[in-house]
Length: 94
Image 1 (cartoon, rainbow, N blue to C red):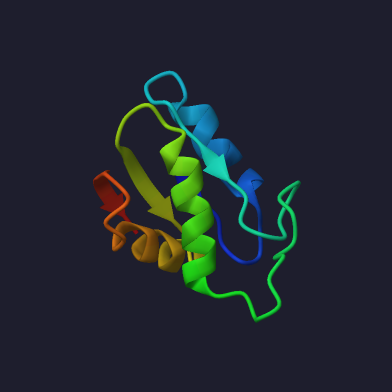
Image 2: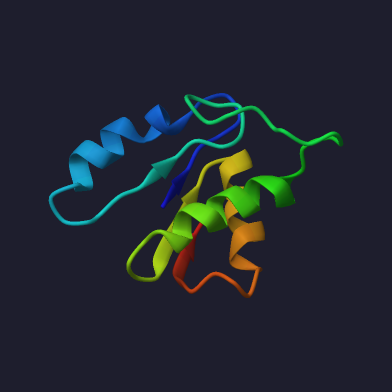
């Protein structure tokens, strides 16, 4: 599962996906407010933990444990998600 930086969206990973898609199942998520993902619906400011919950929800849809790959903000979100007991992470690549 690929988690993008704050200056981009899931399309940040397009080249990597093209290079690896024949060997791996890749999921590039959009965080709140990016691409077609809705803006943060909360009343309080958005946190890394909130973004991690979004990543966990996407990971729950995967049929097997996931590897998290994050860049910049995405790395912080990936670490936060990996720290949650709800995620069965195979490995974590910052």
